[in-house]
Image (cartoon, rainbow, N blue to C red):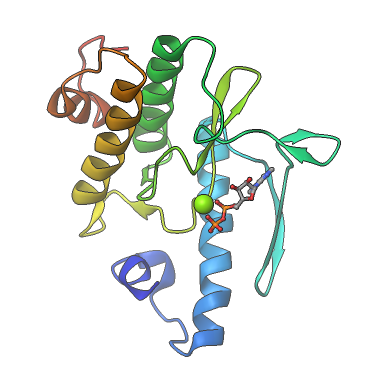
Length: 170
Ligand SMILES: Nc1ncnc2c1ncn2[C@@H]1O[C@H](COP(=O)(O)OP(=O)(O)O)[C@@H](O)[C@H]1O
Ligand SMILES: [Mg+2]
């Protein structure tokens, strides 16, 4: 956890004991969700937090959570892939965040659209790990969708675009 907290000016003076770290982690996930939501990224709506408890909107119906990308295949994988990349770009350019643990385990399919969640480890763009994490997130997405038969885009091209490149990629 420290690796993702150190280097983040939002959490300069935090307790380093296990309990303190867990509380910081909860606060970090809440703040990250807020930033993402304000930028218009499709994430669960953050409500509040207390100590190690975070309350957010439920994605699903009647207590049944929406399927993870891991558990279901989007109806139109090509369109879903492109939509997901647009979300990653909005998270970067709008919220100033790199998710850092993006994979089919942390993306839900809800009404044929991607919902990104589990965002506690996400880092700000000037965090020393942000480049490396963005690359890993994009590699994971490309691996998943190429397995589905989608003709994925070149990862370096996506990287440039996510960072705000002007070309019309997705
Ligand atoms: N907002 C939500 N709405 C519905 N289900 C959720 C929500 N957040 C998490 N879940 C469910 O809980 C599981 C674990 O959540 P996650 O945030 O990925 O925690 P972990 O740190 O264990 O990976 C997810 O795979 C998903 O099924
Ligand atoms: Mg998870």
